[in-house]
Picture 1 (cartoon, helix red, strand yellow):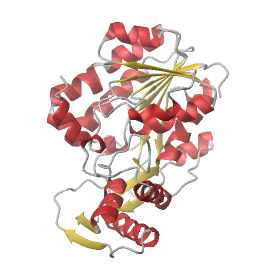
Picture 2 (picture 1 turned 90 degrees about the vertical axis):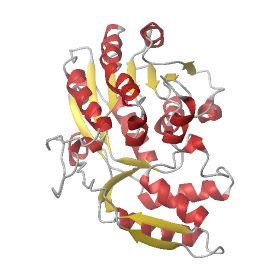
Picture 3 (picture 1 turned 120 degrees about the horizontal axis):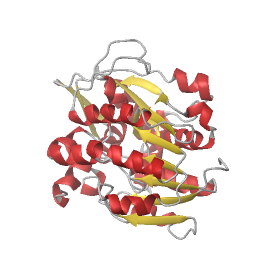
Picture 4 (picture 1 turned 180 degrees about the vertical axis):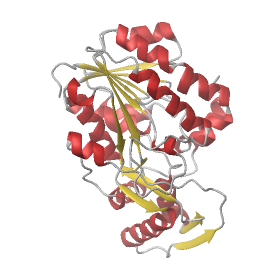
Length: 338
């Protein structure tokens, strides 16, 4: 724990990554305040809701009066909240822009004015678009292909311009996260494949040659913990890719089939079918900078993320994989957020 950062505000703290991060921050000794709309239910933080160090605020980060109250006394901000993934953004582009872009500068500025010393922004590795480069580093040109990734990219320079000797912003470009969390998502590539393999006994691969960077959710959580813990001079103004294994979708499908077949061998075999796809998004990222500069290296594999999902399925934590709460686009279609 960074002794100077006692209270942390996690926007989107009841989301997929947030539901895994918040309990670990509490373990680390931080006082954690969560600001979230709780669109996907109240259960995400139920296991730690009893802890005195946790404060939950249900609300919209576009409400600046609420935001000022949420930021009072905060030493650091981990900004995870957004309309996440391309389909959810495209469902209502105006809404996506208002939350992911228009609300960003006020949040960052108010955080600095409130006295926060650290601001960690969860951007995305999809800002790079399509690339055939063998290793996509942080200096690679940004060529976002969708509005979701475009607005993620546009927020980055806004944040960096706010840096001062007492306000240390840092940008993270995560790979696609995978594995079990209390607020589970089954609309991310590894999680989708594993869910289909387990529940349907059939995986359909669209294309398959597209390269995708991935990271186990536990490693993603550890990256945020490290960025909170380090002194300002090591992180202020920095941008870091955070990922682990770069694999093709076809490789991920075969991997998930193997994991499910091994852990659930008494049921029927898992079939795999490949169909053509117009999805040309393909890129691999290099996480060399965060290793060289901060010493961060992932400790878990994508196979272990799949294993955590299968274990959750086997113990009945997921009974209906089609439940809208596991799929961002389906929930967004239901709630009609404006």
